[in-house]
Image (cartoon, rainbow, N blue to C red; front, top):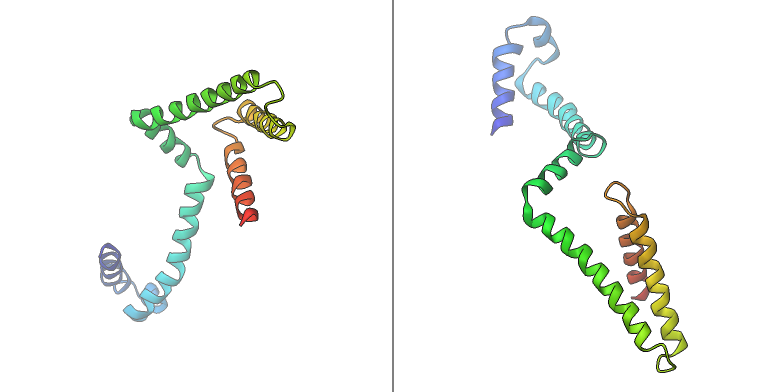
Length: 145
């Protein structure tokens, strides 16, 4: 409704009163077609630039994290769970260091621990290590189907 209102008001109050603009937009239908043909793609490009290329999205995410205590708690809980699970795996390996585990199982567990340690040492909020890891998991999941 707001877009229709803006188009109507701008055409009938501005375009009709100026002969130069009236020559470019002879009818209201021409005005709508030209403005929507140029305006819609332009708005999409500006929105994309605003969302992806500017600092506005990052600032919004930072503010929402500061304001929403539950979101911050979920992130901290996830980190604590990751550390706890890694510690439990290491304790599990110590307990079953004897031959009760197959060498293949030991290798799988050790490879996983190395992978988690590398990920947690190199990732930050600013880099995309989490996204890369997620894509890797999705790729492996699609290969197993």
